[in-house]
Length: 258
Length: 237
Image (spheres, each protein chain N blue to C red):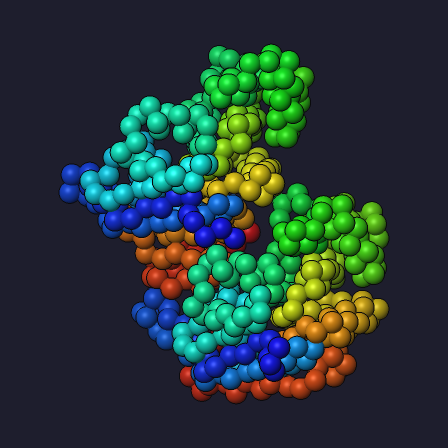
């Protein structure tokens, strides 16, 4: 157990006009930990993810990232070049819509390989072998390496996005509703894949979801948001099995049992 | 070790149901339980008295309303009611095991890996963990052909045997057992009893709910009776 958080935010405020999107939010993520931000549409969870990753500026508050060298990087004061470098090397992003994370006009192997080239890999054979290995890990037949992802199913595209994200071994991965647009059977496969890869690689993950089953399966810890505020947080099974806040009780009791 | 591996002091638990107008259901109050290494304590009391609620509090699955839950973890006393989520995870990985009434099935994960997972989490090499999982599943009369299958389609008794193997494989110093033999046949009940006795002999402190009085008499050193609170009689917990 490491005692220093990899990402730490405090006092985050953000308003869109009169509506508070974030209201005094504080959050920490430790290495090897999957933290899910749970809430309904409009709860502020996607805004929080964007602020934490530096994509959106907050009105107040601070986000600190502890980089691989152990130095604290103030995410919103680091500058665009530094953030781009982090996004290429130590961070990964898995978007709800694979089209936001893939280049559909580039081959599947190219999508994985170009992330490696962005961090300095130059040997063509080595890059191609690594891409094939990652396609296998996400259960895509390496024979499809030269096909374009626009011809892939939604589930395959999402698995390819995960391969593209993880090939560079990021330390911290931001995921926004990674199973959002998929059929239930395709979701289960993807969730299991994410679960196994995250455990194998010891990744820290910040996951945004409105789906309690996804949170239960993937997350060690939950942060429940409503109207820009964290209303409850804690160990995943404690929050879901013994919810304390009225809103969490409503969320949990609204789930249809299979 | 001076005396106990697990103890509660004045443990209280009340459920507040915000969706039912803030109704309050007091279930546990002033629970003082102390369990020594190598001892098995069976929870007793009528249905609805709060046996399962106490078990869930002891695992950190339910938050306590008052009092303390102390565990001997890494040689020190840790108060579970005050521990943050990361410390609870560490305690569960190293010290505190739990066999629930029903296995929570994870899609696509083979039975063998469900059992091996907590071993790997404690640092055992994957091959060794799988071998240990295989031995334990075989001892619970699970044919090897089933080891590679996810337990989603298994019978209740087969799922419970996977659950038992997962709970007993790591050798936790503190073990919580919630109806561990409920869906087992006589032969597998005997294996479960042997596993519990071996865990005790290895120094584990065991707390269990056993509706099967024969099993209870074979493993428990004493009973701990929870008196139902009058207000809690409507609670299903």
